[in-house]
Length: 227
Image (cartoon, rainbow, N blue to C red; front, side, top):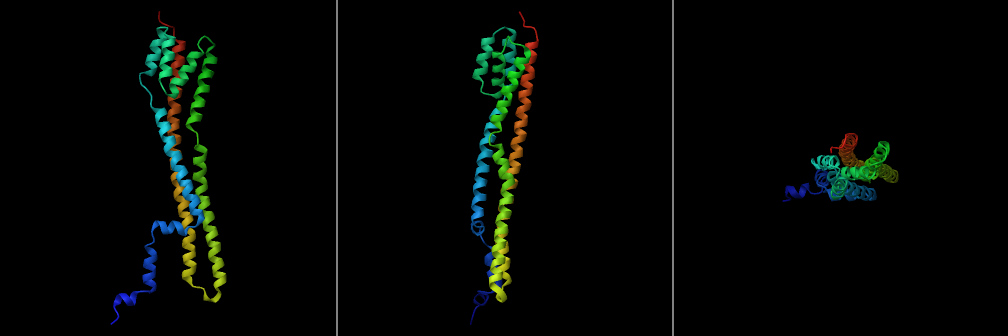
């Protein structure tokens, strides 16, 4: 007697169940060469996000006593001690104050301009590779759509070759394979977009800290030195 398992073997329902259990690796390979490019962009985006996150987080850490010590040194006339403190402190705020100290004796406008220039340079360093991450966020979905269009063209080309023997499963299979690249591109694009915006917010926090430090230092210069 033929068992039920043998009877079910090779039926459309069984084949559909087998196809439904495709692994992520199978789906990735089904997407074709476009998926390789999308995967490469995902690794680049991940590297940029992690690297920039570490750099920006380090820059955002500020010593709460730094400006108080600078203020005490300046009031006591210990300019050299204030300069040494700035050199020992590895932060954008310290480099701004250090530049301001080197401009002491010049008009306040010159000191302000020097501090602002250093601040812009520090922000430019923190925003390094931001354009690349933004490009990946915008280009990945477009690349996915491009892969889908290529897959659709191939699917319809196979339809034209099939003629009267066209099987609807052939068409549906070609379409779902084509849509894989769109899904991959959207996933990478969305994650890169969120990562980019998170980094932008963190840089804005650093900008606020730099502006606060600049204002405090200029206030120190405008106050009379204690004797």
